[in-house]
Length: 127
Image (cartoon, rainbow, N blue to C red; front, side, top):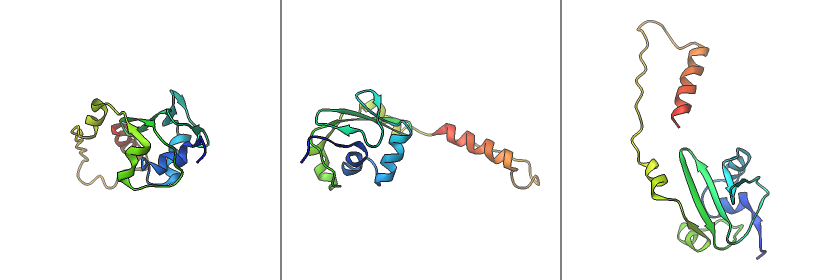
């Protein structure tokens, strides 16, 4: 095994993302950092690196213990990556989501394109 591996392959291998293309998109979207700097998908990750991944409102933190470019079963993941994510971040997963009740006047029909964009923007801001 080499002493480095592509970050997108590694994140897919340790099951942070379901597909490699999701991992690549996260890197391209500046949601993955290695040692505090944004990582492109081809960035090499080495043993001992600390990786931060933003998924939704949660910032996950992992320490690289071993490298692998092959996807592994979930029971093997702790041998390759140590999850350093603080409990305060993990609690965001279980936080109650605010419910928004949208009221439209009866008989106004379907939302216009502009109204739909505003609704989508409101829902995206909740994530």
